[in-house]
Amino acid sequence: MRTVPEFFESRVAAAGDAPAVVFGENVVGYAELNARANRLARLLIAAGVGPDALVAVAVPRSERLIVAVLAVLKAGGAYLPLDPAYPAERLAHMAADARPLLLLRTAGVTGLDLDVPEIVLDHPGTEQRCARESGGDVTQDERLAPLLTGHLMYVIYTSGSTGVPKGVALSHAGVADLVATQERLYGVGPGDRVLQWASFSFDAWFWDVTLALLNGATLVMADQDALMPGENLRETLLRHDVNHAVLPPVALGVTESEGLLLGGTITSTGDVCTRSLAADWSKDRRLYNAYGPTEVTVGASIGGPIEGVQEEVTIGTLWDGGAVYVLDQGLRDLRDGGEGELYLAGTGVARGYLNRPALTASRFVADPYGPPGSRMYRSGDKGRREGGALYFTGRIDNQVKVRGFRIELGEIETRLESHPAVDIAVAAVGGDDVPTQHIVAFVSLATRDTGSAIEAELREHTRAALPGHMVPSAVIVLDSLPTLPNGKIDRRELAERARHSQALTPEPDAETGAEGTESYEQILCGMVRETLKVGQVSPGDNFFDLGGHSVLAAKLAGRLRKELGVVVPMRSMFAAGTLAELAQIMERAERV
Image (cartoon, rainbow, N blue to C red):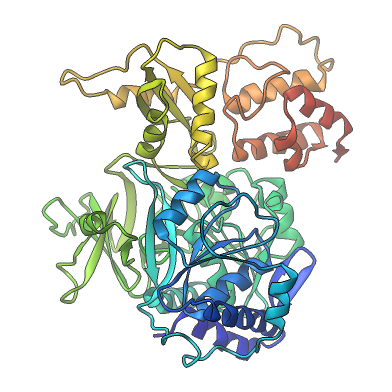
């Protein structure tokens, strides 16, 4: 079994100067990428980085990020991704919990008060020190200790049910089977171009990178704006001739498939792939549907290629080196199509949760069906097996998926309840379908404050500590939360309220004149009402304060382009403070 550096270096030997990473106008070949990573790795070794040492990495999307991660792994260490866009409070918690030895960042990433020694990668002094190092492969003798497959590879933090994010610790042990699965299913190789879409904070990022760089292909990177679902993503895929991509259903649902990834592959992951998406994206390309939580090395099963309309889209069969059991509460194997909990086993199972032994013991349990001493991960996902194929059927706990993001509602509730005005908080998922999904929070107050002022204040309170996808689109103050006869909160009733919280009948705009006489401002307000499914929209409203998010913004931009012929860049969608400002941008925008 080989580690990531060994897999990568074997590809470098075969690829030479072939393009490894493309970012904007920058193209870095395999040999150059390897040499840059080796030079930085030697600096890290000199700084004390070795096997099982954790290094925090806060670097924006770029070829420099790939160099940094490869260098950490080549030194023998493990990387801790810190997304600079995350709230400082959350990043500080992750660093305090993980206790990394070192922080790697670029000069543009500021405001991180982590109390960790740091190396600024683009500082002239750092670049000069790297230039003096050898670009040859780092040997086992150079490392502080030999790097083995059992050593730590990365730690990724996920939402925590107790209100505290938890770090999932993965070793190199599952990489060989990950690569074998990629080779068997995708056949990626020299000349192929793989999109790097996922955020650095998620394990899907590691899949994108390994699918390209451990298989001899080219990794295509782009700024966040260029990857926004819809027209921006479509243009990026076409411009860079990408033929392999992994995208969540929410992104596929707002991106036109025609002409994309022809003859290549698209993998849907992170949420349920619907029949309509499968029918659309299985044309002219191979479509796969993948499943696997962060607690295994990226994935556990893959279904496909999926062809045409199916009654229910399978999450497929096991990938190499893995096992998925469907078990009842007594851990008995359900082989007859019965629904049970999915337990994941095999080479890719994580070590556990960093510095959380009790939680690790409760979720990573002995595998009664595997070799002596083996473990399996209790996923909390429900599923069934039919004819050898696996089907995902839901969750058994309070964890949800919203637009592909794994969210523990308890973490949102805990943050809200930390506000002095809040007595009790309950979070739920609103929206009728995947693109319109959003978080709705219901609170009862410990004070007499009511109205929109406290609701807005509570949203800002969550925004200060939680990533954007966990910030409630609406906070609703109730005099008291509904309860069951036993006195417990009636979460089912609140979930039903949340589902319909923005499904209000649009009210007519009294200022709308005869057909063809509407201003851009009036047309835009009408489209926003329909997109967000809210009752009243005025020019002074902010799209995101009304409950919008990035996917709905992409959906709205697509409508503006398709129905009005107006091209509004995604950065303008985010920059506009009000709909009136956005209407002015529309008036000046490019026409198609």
